[in-house]
Length: 169
Image (cartoon, rainbow, N blue to C red):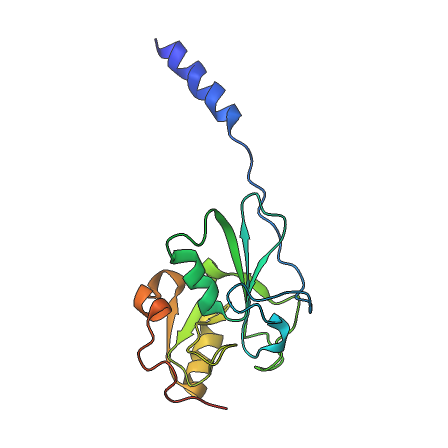
């Protein structure tokens, strides 16, 4: 029986397909926001690209917060493989972060929440940074507090309380 069980485990493990995680791609003028259908590159602040299993191209978002909402809303994301976000610690400026070379995995980033800076559509943003020190520096300058990906509350992502308060131009 033990031999049969071992052979079954070996057989089943061979059936698992290796999942290839796509690399981030350069943001171009062809990228349209999933929710707004606007040109992503024309919006200020950090952007996001989402890859789902069995989909050939990225799903683009004008704000990181929208991509995170997409990932948790029932009926939206189906099989997300990876979410890439701008590392704003490497961005040349807020209004036009680079289109390539500064993408990081969303789950590995630190985020500034409740800052005075607003995302691509003028709403609160979850502002990503590769390292906590850069996030801390940003929060000292623009307010807010730093959290890890796992600590971003559902209420912050989906809520709209104080949505447009303390906006910085």
